[in-house]
Length: 296
Image (cartoon, rainbow, N blue to C red):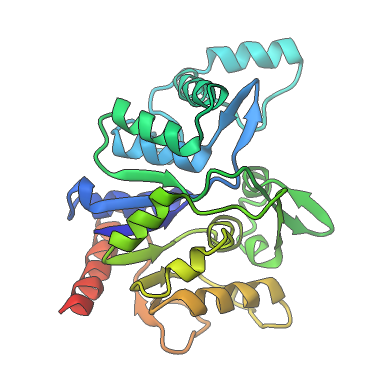
């Protein structure tokens, strides 16, 4: 079994490729929940929900978020009533999922309970879990301003290097804890795969969960790095340097793109571009070859 530490559309593309070569019950996913937010009385967990939509066959793969064919009648009316546009519009079916989750929370359950319930409802055999049940938030700090991850991704969608310039600020009343379910799936995994995704605002918040990095110590960990800035230097991108140090400390194999200009010593070079089904599946096969060669 493999476990993917996931968040964002690039991870979704790779996971979908894994589904073409593995059974769903051989894949577990630990989702980023640091970008969850309450709106209109309900908790939205974008990264977690998109995984549920992917495995249930409902994901809008044109945008790699939300439910395909969803309508936005409720959101449009809310925008008119409040006289402002929602920064993160929520479809009607997607809103129903958020309401179902929030009802479980209001009745004393937690995010893991809600994820398990939704997976049962959608007949998903993979384990899709939040990294923690503790509520915590992450902000990307750039140019002396703080942005929630979802807003940051939207505002800087055309500025690829913004992710590497930004530092990460974690806001929580207490350090988030790993759930027993997450500990269990990591222990049972033959390999843990980190990425590919915006590492600072998606992956590092998961690795910041108490004892998470320690739980990876005796596991075979493969990390797929995003392409670093062409003008990368430790001095110019100090937060990126810290990110690389953390990933090195937990990884047995680091994969870089074959066209990457900045070389990380000891990295494996593969084509990590995921702009087609063929390329995504090819990368998935390459990763599974590395996993299987380790087990021999």
